[in-house]
Length: 398
Image 1 (tube, rainbow, N blue to C red):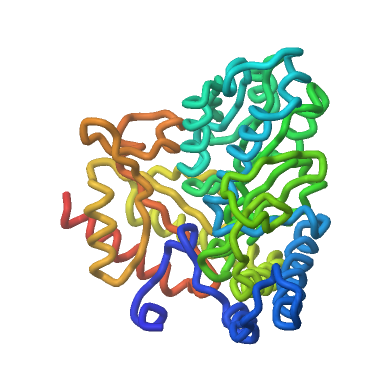
Image 2 (cartoon, helix red, strand yellow):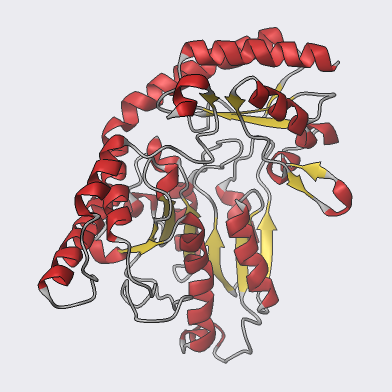
């Protein structure tokens, strides 16, 4: 590809290039004409390939195959987890079990979400509020980490659902999901616990039962698989209602003819990154550490928003005073380097990262963020060049 030879790509947290093996897996089955829901030979073959992909994803999760639901991507998986549970709760007798009475929409239900989630999660909870539910947004500490106590303090008798991402997509911080989920279940085993996994499985073993989650969402494009496919782990103790209606595919939870080729590519990529997880984590942690040291030497005013000891090994989020992050990102782009600002436009034109804002500090810290995210093709030479070019750009912008 053109950018592989001419450009430096440091935005792997946004999206990854599908592995050659994943592309090969898709090509092997792209000629299948059968609809996996049919009964003729072609349909049965498509169904076999689809279920083989499901088995492989389930194996990586330490889950049962029937607990894996394929979706169109991470966003849909998140929506199905949050809104699918809301829809089930609002129309089922389970509502009565919570408060011994029914309620219109989701009134008198309480939901908890991390304030530093991806917009797909936050917007899903905004919809919960529009439907009548009460939502509490909880903040992490100055490192971006949630303590068990913080989560437990937010729980009420009417709390039904909690969502905390496993690793943050902007600053990379990893949450103690296992400890949090265990404490939540001890306090109230009825509460459903969801976690957005994002790119965490690249570097952390996603054994869902060990983590103690009821629901966990995944996106293939974050894991070196094809775009346009994802998965939701749905524990057997959780009931959801579909948010896409139709033919009742995916155990009735996600209607629409499954894309067999994408599922096969996703499964192959997941399998490979799982095999290489430990070795690649060590490599990237070393590269990121050296890159951080170079940046600190070349740009003394830099602030590191990523806690290098408690984060995924491939993300480094920084803030620099006196800059416009969009200008710096575009300047790097002109030098052939792709990075992300991850800033969000707020009312009135103010721009800041809602994640970094929660960490505290002067307003410029959240406004002047740059995120560098490393990947399989990242080299020490590329990072050294990036640090040098960034320093030169900053000198000219002063």
